[in-house]
Figure 1 (cartoon, rainbow, N blue to C red):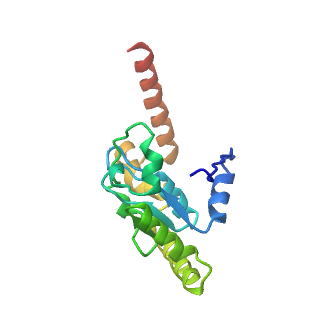
Figure 2: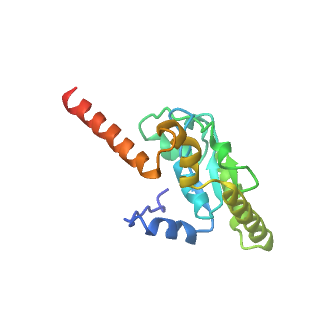
Length: 179
């Protein structure tokens, strides 16, 4: 770890998908506190056409090897696996799931080695991402099919949703301020 350096940079929101789109492979080490939420970074990566290697473990204590050593000095976290991860990552189709550092290293070598086999494996995952993302409804479609029927009265136009949410937000703010 003495030879590892970490550099972070600030990105404008429009640059984030461009940066992801320039990568060959995404790696997600995120855990969940509830096990019921989706790892949004995976959603970002897949949305940019990027195959993902994502951690799928029962808890961070399952993580072994160098990644575990890095976390050993961090405050204890009660993170669990994403029970919903399979809604996004289909292992071997649009990404890979790993349980420990050794398995991740093996996946990285299999996908990023300078060989024809690695290039073909990565291309197959990219094709899987494109196919799965083509089937996934976009935000507006999802809103109209799932949220709008619950939040809007029948026959209300799309701007009614904005007005209603603004009223709810104003009400929540007033309750927070004066409640």
